[in-house]
Image 1: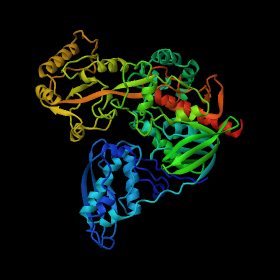
Image 2: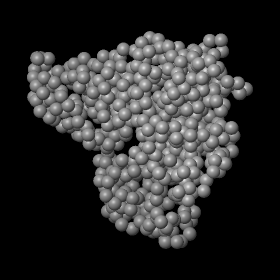
Image 3: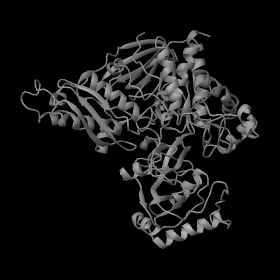
Image 4: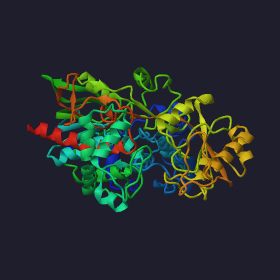
Length: 625
């Protein structure tokens, strides 16, 4: 078996040159729709002089300012008379494992092949386009026209057929956990990932993992139990979860924490409470975000390259079945080459379907049936992911799909994309203000309550308003790595020294906005709130001084709780509960675990717990046990 990727353990370090040759990536179609197709290509080669292939470059280091996904950054490119020598994008603030990984990957390709004609990384479209644009502008400054006229990076050497014990469809958190568990159980594994990066939406999650952990919790004076965790999860899901699956999750979540620690994940010493977790049992990694898990997984993959193969840009198209058993996967590489993976067992871990507008509207018959979940409502997931293809694969093999109408919305969506960016709605010292300048809801309410109230507002939108209490320094990164000045540079927020000026920039009534702030401050001072908000004396304070900041928000699709029916062995099952031989599933693609509402911190617990379960059991099946 031929390994096709070599991944470093640190997203800040470039990948080996060999990676570029074997993970050719197609530029995501939405790039054109977003108007961010890079400047590199035949269109610019027309400015090259006739002797461009022989002309020397104007040696030196050149710079270009570009707008990334999270913040503007500078691309610095060093040229010798003959070649591009170095690309420096060290001041970028792109997301670890996503945009930051794309910058590293593409920089390596440009340096290796000496061309700006590279494809962007699917799943990191905006970051890719920004880098290509920046390098192209620097090449123009250096009169390095040969780089713009050079051939595109060659396609990867991908085999027609792979044979393995276990094939995992999906390289996100659940998929990689499944793959690693299968390897640990003795199997050889091939992972098919349709994007140009691994980690999926786990990369951009905040990484909270719920588990009852006496060692940590008792030192904090937290009273908790597995039974309480189970009851809370069932109640939070409105009693629609499958009891045996919820029991498995709550009984084995701490085992997942210990398993992750054995691989190298470092957790903080104290537990916290993720938004909507309904308990103080959330584990957070020492380094921020869900990418902490993915970096550790990638190190394991590198260390076990003889047993695990990651194939990027692979769109699974169909499960192969024989005599009622699933025996492999048919896939399409880079949109053009047919690839077959013959496997003794297959694990589907393709995530949810929140990014598939047509499908989510079709199944939206539950709590949000009065809301049209069309493309005016975005999705917090990485959009090339979260399309629901895994559901069709499983259904085609006879598996039942359950709970599809259970769709979770979050109030922190960015208009136009639905991504959770910029000023967040969680935390303290913030106001929800409608387009009339008025408060309209208890800002500390549950997610579904918040979203239902937002939909009742004019244009189903609102502003989250904060002041210097949340951002005392406009250049200090917040918990998500963004600064006020980054947000302003991208035009994502408005800022003002006075409430009146802020209201003008928001387009709301200044008197209403000031009255809303005054009323909130009275609640902080002890007055009962008309919306039911209860101030925390240790965290909330009166909002009186500027600078003031406001960011427009909309509800966004956050998690799809329905999916493939599975049992406690993570086997995909038909409508009668019978397992489909050779087919397993894990993560958001499955149904029955979260009921009709997922608790904050339970998604990562689900991915890791059922991912380990699926990988171990698939390996046993492949071995004939």
